[in-house]
Image 1: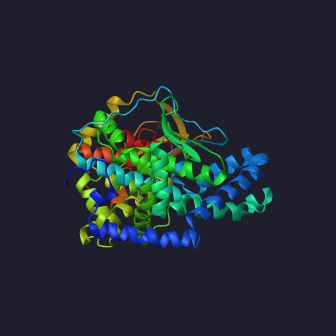
Image 2: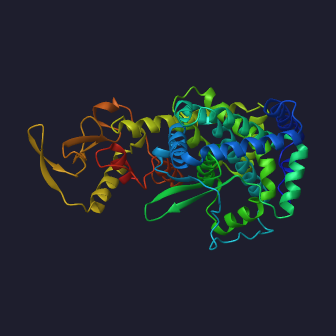
Image 3: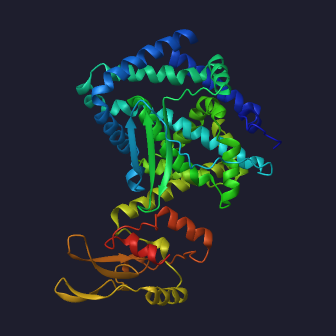
Length: 445
């Protein structure tokens, strides 16, 4: 890969891929704007936007809450990952902090890393465009406020995002940006609240559909963090080189089609759990830069190799399985088993580190010790704990006992990458209540 300089898509992708993206953009332009000229579209969108803002004024607080509820319902990963959303419709939009550091470019940053970041930014923008139309899920509630809003929302989104498929409009936007003009109808940012130990999406916009767009964008910015490496200074340099306003028009133009290709792969898996989609995206983002670019390029051109397709489907199935374990709490955890000799060492070490006081309680008519993992019967280990209601319950965890049926599986706990992957998949930094198997399995990792 040669020098990208401005990290342009034409220099990232092969001509075949750009032809496919531009073809999709041309089709999108016809679907979104029809036969309207650019000038007609700009005049029409301003008129509709003014009508929307005026109609929304008495309902801004309610609409802001609906936007949060709607996105949370459409993207269950938000609740699963304990992401907080701070979203408001308001006139004056400015989330930028005076204390924010200005990223500095580094000429030594690998070109492939910058290219990867640019593609992820495009996917983020694409996801936010597609997610903006989720307001149709709440049509009945929106109609109670004003039954003209839904049609106007649909029209404004088609026009606002449709112009990003118009080359003349993009040229005009780039010229305006060069002159320092701001054209945003909203802003979003993701921050990490260390005190609450959770990600927060902050979003502000001048109207409801733009607020939904910004919330989804903030969510996918969190997902996009998985594309960074461990070198914080290098990450800052990548952001400085790639995350620029002049890049946004092309990200909005092409990103939606890259997102569509990834989302279609999720749909093809026939998995009925939307959380898998975002978690699968994080696994794609974790690929090495060259492997990532090759995967995305083949995906766009519908030319995934057999190995790439098998990897993708396998990852999604594995994620689905892990989510089911988290949801049920007591499902078979056989993949977390260890060899018997190593198991003894790890169990002894676990008990040495376990500092919580032990208590006795009654379980099914007999005395048991709370909080003390021990040899299991149904599963490899068992532990008795009190649930939030104060009832003593038995938690079975680990591979073994009668559920193993003579099978053995090895865990790669001593492998740093496997350990990291396990803890990330199960959100072991916040393992949940002591009454769930995930809590105890995370402690052993």
